[in-house]
Length: 113
Length: 114
Image 1 (tube, rainbow over the protein chains, first blue to last red):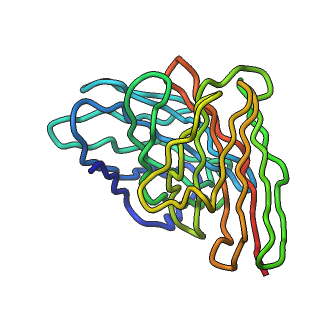
Image 2 (image 1 turned 120 degrees about the vertical axis):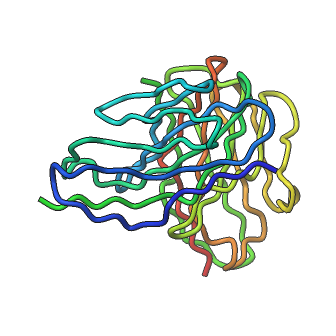
């Protein structure tokens, strides 16, 4: 079956530090890959996505590249802010409507001023 | 952006009672809705997928008679936890799927069964 593995947290950083959260996956076929973010007390929000190999998703200074050869979709941000403190989930899914998502375990990120 | 609401946001009930959780897409129509369960500090586990007007499809290991899902309209799906027990205590999250290959998540409902 499909699975997503991401690094365990918590990850504690200082403001303006570089952030990397590793994500690897096991899947059949050609899934789309996603990063979701969950801020305290809120629901999951789509942060970025990539639908095919070598695509790069980007949003709010975050980037992730769909690497089929290494089955990875690592999330990076060059300079984090306190407001980036949240839980980040890597996920994969298929198809159009009815896109069943498989999530990784989530990584809690805490950015200190 | 698309907004999905859940009601209630938290609920406490006695063991043996039933609890209904509503999930609404506020500004769009969702042909598919998903129900997830999230344990503390763990990931979301898909429980079931529901399409408007048809029976829900449950994931392996999820008891369909215990977790009743109704998707009566393109903007409303409900999850009823029947005869709830303490082990059903969890964070339940719904999402609404669009034909544009996106899911929009509700804020979740925390259920505590005493």
